[in-house]
Length: 335
Image (cartoon, rainbow, N blue to C red; front, side, top):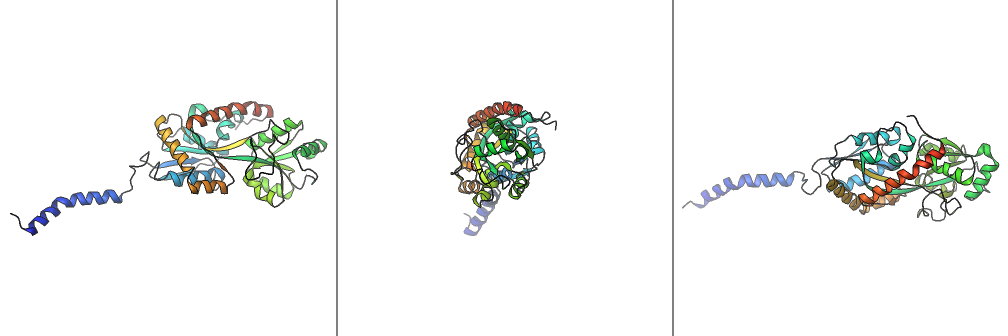
């Protein structure tokens, strides 16, 4: 019969490999509870610090360790978000690459650019929106203080055609067409002044260099609060909870002018349905996390998520809706 010392030695020999394996497994990062076992790349077609990038980074913190073991936000800025979409179109369709973008890149751009490089419905699967933001029509000090409503502005623009201009952050983007829709609805020719981004437009609005502008609400909200700009209407179907005293275009008498921007998640078209469903669940779970809700509210965004099927219908409806609007504007691009 082996003595006690010999028995302990024997147990140590037998159990040592088991203990080493167990400790190594515990120390290693586990992907057993994640949907995919490789890093997730979130492609954003805009520079760091912008709205789309901010939405992506808020989601990334929640998807890390739940959907994927690690998450990378990849900013492929350029061509108004088109470079990011083009990159995701040709990426691996296994759920490890997704696009976070303003939905207009996929719903309005197809009607604007003759050489787009992607087909919304053929090349992408909509997963879910993450946030929604409305647009604001504001006037600067170049417009008389007596102009207090949108109807006042339209009347002033008709009486002062040389000054009837509005700025937008970019030609061919949603704010541009919000302005052209207003012109058509009001029966007035409004000259569009395109800028390279919302910041320079706001700067010129504050300086009175341009009489009016269409921006996403967060860009002008603080200036309206200080009285430096006058927001006459918002473009959503209902008033913004961040500016409840300002009417919608419809409430102001221009019922055909309505537009919201969705910041949304898309994947390559051939991504398996089961993976899309799990990603959708992960995104919607992230959208109720306190850091995400607080982060989006800080941006003056509304949290907005749907099933993939529901969001697909929204994308199809928006894609169809914007065609006649863009055509009526007469704007197109050869880029």
